[in-house]
Length: 144
Image 1 (cartoon, rainbow, N blue to C red):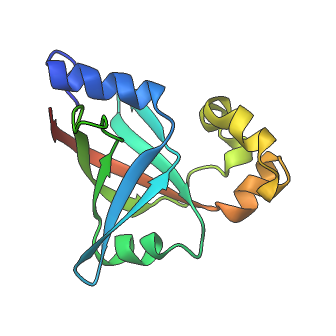
Image 2: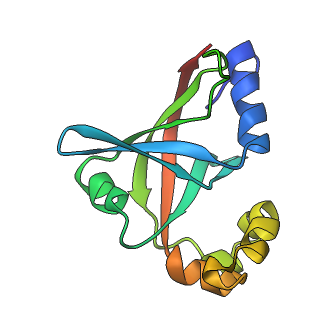
């Protein structure tokens, strides 16, 4: 688990609750493939995880199936400060509910989903495009 008693752990946890975009990097034939994604961090008795919903056509799906290791990072400052990287193991988690039934995800992104007309401004429209849930566990962090 991310250790909130350390300065780095506390900062990462704060950014996981505040930031709404994170860069997710998978590997495709040996080359890193970063992409910005929306995410939800959850921490409970069963542990911690990060949930991402992906387009079915996204290359990251095949990448994760071939190699589940991923890295997630936040934007850093213009001068290269606040570097926070999370490493984990990803899997396609089809047992997770679709976005319209995932209250925590809806609460986090309601305003963005409703204002974006590329999916009609509805949760159902968003879920039709971003239908593949990805669960990232075994989280570890590094940075400064």
